[in-house]
Length: 215
Image 1 (cartoon, rainbow, N blue to C red):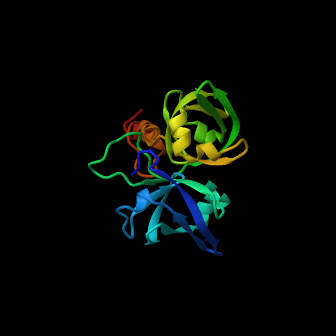
Image 2 (image 1 turned 90 degrees about the vertical axis):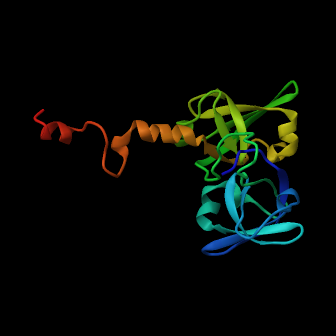
Image 3 (image 1 turned 90 degrees about the horizontal axis):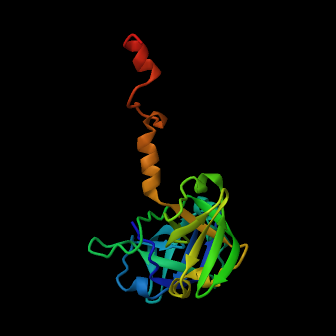
C-alpha cells in the first residue's frame, strides 16, 4: 500500500519492450536507501516489483498489459517519473490509501496559473469519473491530490508550488496522459451497497427469496 506522497522524481535510464513482457530501469536515490529484491515501488502510481538494483538504479519487470493500460507505455529513456516506496507499518499516513493499481488514464486538457497555485484539468472516461467527487481524493501519477472541481467528463486539482516542484507535474503539459487511481473506499462502499451485483451468493431480499417464501 502507498499513500500518494511522492518521495522523489526518478529518471528512466532504459526501457526495453519485448513481445510478452518488458523491463524498466530507473535511476533513483532516496527509494534505494533500504531497497531489497521483491520490494514494491510505485512508478507514476503503478506498483512495480524490484527485480534488480544497484547503487543508483533499480529494475522492474513490466507486463505488456500494464504498458498498454497505463501511461508507462509512453515513457522513454530520460523520462521523469514519480517514485514512492510501499508504506512501512510505522510510517506516517500523509495522503490517502493508494493501492498502485490504476483504474485508467486521463489527458491533461488545461493548465492554468492562479496566483501561486496551478490548476490542472484532467479529462477521462465515465468509468473513472464515477468515483470522482469534489473535495475527495484521487491519485494522479501516484500523487495524492484533492479534487477541487468536477464536471461530467473532467475534474480539476489545484497544485501548490511544493507539489509541482517535488513531482513530475512540473514537466507536464496540455495533452499529456496521466495515470489515475480512484479512492478505493468509494469502490468498496459501492460493492457493499449493491451485493446483488456480486458473482457469489447474493445477500438481502431477491425475487427468488420472495417466491420461496410465498410472496
